Image (cartoon, rainbow, N blue to C red; front, side, top):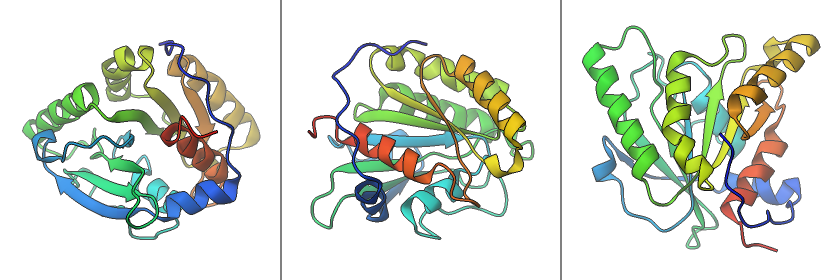
Length: 221
């Protein structure tokens, strides 16, 4: 999955600029399906991943807000697309989209299939989608559903959609395991970015923050 050549990335911001920008995140709306999402012309960055991959925790750590993204105590229970605005009040310049976790065994099959369709529809047709962050627990690696998601977004990545494979819970790995997980993930990511992340130890927070800022501000000098 080789991304198409695009405009040169802007100069990286300092970490304070990027983390401060993410800290402005505020709830915008929630929608059960794509049809209920507002049509926007702002760059949108979607967070996706299996239930228990640490998606909500990651969003909360990146935005420095403990309860911005709701993490249900019952995996698979959260079944809406949640949008969050980024930017100073009154000057929103980007959107974060938190998509429902997938793959939890206890969720009824009909619900699983419905959400697979909703997510695929969003990832394929959402016009202002500029980047996808796929969160994966490196102790388990990419699953069949993760592979399906990669296939769904492959055509858009080849057309310039930004993609980050984020290996969460990196604090659970020793140095050798982390190096191996990175090596394997880089092969699977097909040209996308790959980074280690630990919400507990704040590993990767500044690096990921700066990457997201760059993706949302492609024309910023």
